View 1 (cartoon, one colour):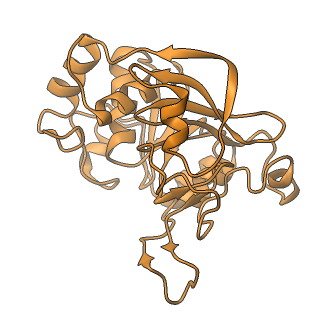
View 2 (cartoon, rainbow, N blue to C red; view 1 turned 30 degrees about the vertical axis):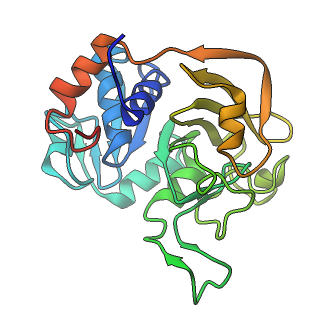
View 3 (cartoon, rainbow, N blue to C red; view 1 turned 120 degrees about the vertical axis):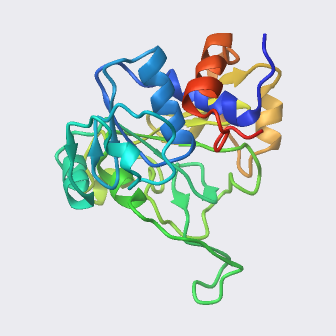
Length: 256
């Protein structure tokens, strides 16, 4: 088994979730790397869609922004943000990868501010970008994030991006499309999903070398546990070779 780092583990885990023939809305960084790895190794017919308008490109190398010319290389279209968001509203985007400074037990994300006073925050963050739109309308939202108590909080300081809101059917009651919402959380320690009735976060698989107790100790709220916990296998030699040599040879994302 080759040595690997936390970022490589999360990217490889995410790439295995994307089915062949599905569509995925991504930004740059780790989500893009995961989609590229899936396309090269598991899902050759995966359709990658960038927020700025590139649809179904054959990405030659890691782009550095969502408007990078590489995001439209051999693409079927080079449109714009409005067209991509319209695709989401029409139900044409199966998956999206999002992130934030905080995530709570229902998958709500905060990328706006940390603190109790919106006008005098402890930390001011960049905001939504297209995250709120993608989370509202793409069928399955996934998050890649390190497992820490600072990120996994009982309640987000500000709800930038809707998850399952307060659980149960609270999301559907707002008028957001039914069947759309948070799907899986991929961390350096585990894979988590959401219990179907309560919509609370639940551990379903553990990464090599970690226990449920490790995950719980690095979470700011009580986690649910699946009846049977599986082991998520480490990155394979082939995954690491493609990731390091073809996708991110300069290690912009995976680190040095």
